[in-house]
Image (cartoon, rainbow, N blue to C red; front, side, top):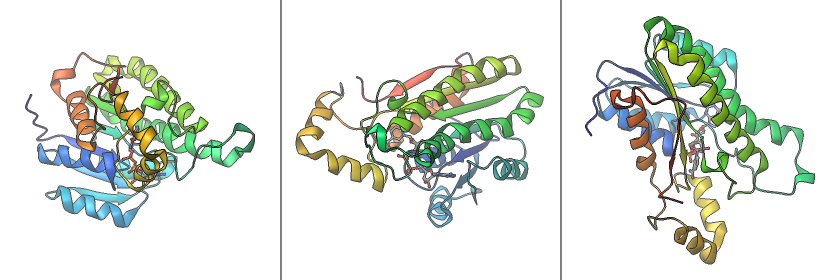
Length: 248
Ligand SMILES: NC(=O)c1ccc[n+]([C@@H]2O[C@H](COP(=O)([O-])OP(=O)(O)OC[C@H]3O[C@@H](n4cnc5c(N)ncnc54)[C@H](O)[C@@H]3O)[C@@H](O)[C@H]2O)c1
């Protein structure tokens, strides 16, 4: 399948590194006009440099509704939105009794609220145009359980999946599709690398043996799925969750 996104404006959140960076790069390579945002401004500049061309980067905290609104207003009419910002915010799995209100809420803010704020910001102009693609990066943790053991991570990703289905129905009549990709474990950044090392050799082998393809994913494997959901080839596909995890 060959992709061409010439003339399309794409926004990728959480694009300073890892999966978001690979998605931004894939769109830039296929001709799109790309806007990337992240809370980490320095790292984001590396993505801008890597993507080259007309790619622009802005420091945005996607948990802040007003900041998101201002960013999208600056971009203008968005054709394709990829909600990739998210993760575990440096948290580690611990027993239910020790979870604080702030820890619980922080993961909902970054994984669920941000998806809502960004979708809310792009929807009006997408509706006016009668075209749009929203692609949410969820997680296998939202469909099953999280290897990290972090309750709020699994729950907030499951909530993001629910939001995907609901928005697909609300926005479908306007020519807007809303889909999600649920990645399996990808060693895409320092925190997933730390998690992988923490598993130890035996658990690492167990994880690899449980994957049909017997390998971990790469950020590019996830980006390929995003390109498909953004392309004309998926114009009658909405509200779907695609697991890209090497087969479970
Ligand atoms: N790596 C994996 O194994 C894996 C598996 C399943 C799902 N995911 C999901 O894929 C997405 C990308 O993951 P990744 O592994 O590339 O993680 P990552 O940490 O490399 O990327 C997430 C990016 O989001 C940014 N971010 C965090 N909070 C933000 C905020 N408030 N505003 C703006 N940007 C913010 C971070 O600075 C970071 O650059 C996440 O949503 C993650 O939950 C990752």
